[in-house]
Image (tube, rainbow, N blue to C red; front, side):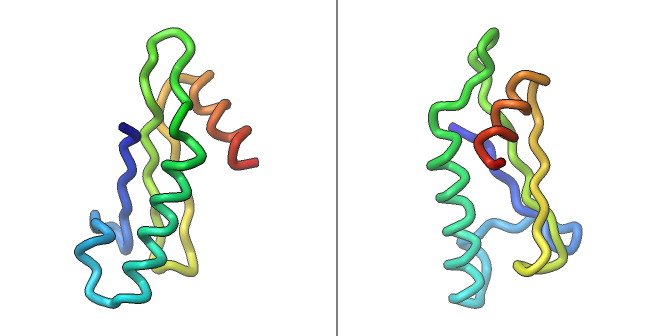
Length: 81
């Protein structure tokens, strides 16, 4: 399974713990889209999956950090353009 972590305002957040219904749905959609795009991505040498950290101060300002081997990170970058 792909490890996806959300950090908003420096704190770890799980989409299902967000009280605002619209915000929660948007975070869940972001998570589902990441999982859909990366479901078959694995490191060619080790078979490891990428770790994705989504950071920002709010939904309007998110950045993505990818952890893994150099070849794995490059593969993820290709998929997200």
